[in-house]
Amino acid sequence: MPGQAFEVPVVMVLAVSENGIIGRGDALPWDLPDDLRHFKRATMGCPVVMGRKTFDSVGRPLPGRTNLVLTRDRGWGAAGVESFVTVEAALKRAEAQSVIDGSPAICVVGGAEIYRLCLPFADRVLLTEVHGHVTGDTHFDLALLGDWQEVSRQRHEAGGKNSHDFSIVELARSGYSSPPGQQAGI
Ligand SMILES: NC(=O)c1ccc[n+]([C@@H]2O[C@H](COP(=O)([O-])OP(=O)(O)OC[C@H]3O[C@@H](n4cnc5c(N)ncnc54)[C@H](OP(=O)(O)O)[C@@H]3O)[C@@H](O)[C@H]2O)c1
Image (cartoon, rainbow, N blue to C red; front, side, top):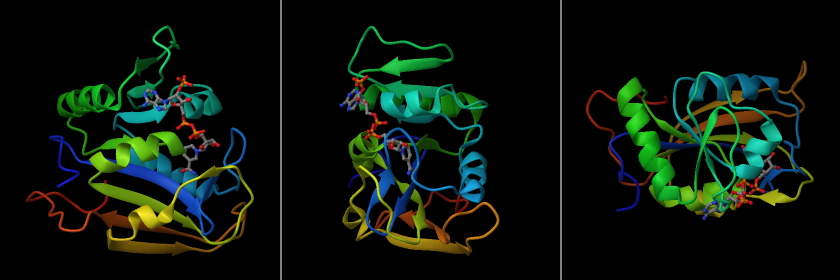
């Protein structure tokens, strides 16, 4: 069965609009500071695995997290991050760091290419459903999550600085059972 390949759960953290958009250019196509706070809480202390383009768009390592960047360019490097040319090597390194730190998850934080590569290894998905149709150029096919099971859902209304209603939905792979004592969420 896919997933459960590592000692530590692999959790994909992603935000997708109803029409499957996750990005526009090198940015997020919405303003959702409350979702960014959720992202920070969910990933803090965990190793984060990301693509080189997502790293470039953030422009710096995410503080308080071991930053692992996937690139095909063996010569690529940036201060405060480690780079990998295969997804398996990045996830193995993340697993080792999680065990050292006692962190509850390995977090895969995008973008689209890296979500596609990591989905077969994922045990859970923390999905932010952005309610609305959004213009953008980077897609995630929500049908890929069609047979995942919903574990929890929390709706947030637009307003203040949040441009859209959104829901944070935790999904578990169909047939996945949490190891004893492991909490929902991360
Ligand atoms: N909504 C969300 O939750 C969310 C989260 C993160 C990012 N985003 C958005 O997503 C967009 C970026 O996503 P993206 O799909 O264009 O790029 P990406 O997944 O961030 O990075 C792609 C890069 O990863 C490397 N890569 C891809 N496959 C690889 C493999 N098999 N082995 C080794 N390295 C590999 C390559 O780097 P090299 O070119 O260096 O070889 C490739 O160019 C941006 O718009 C960003 O804002 C959205």
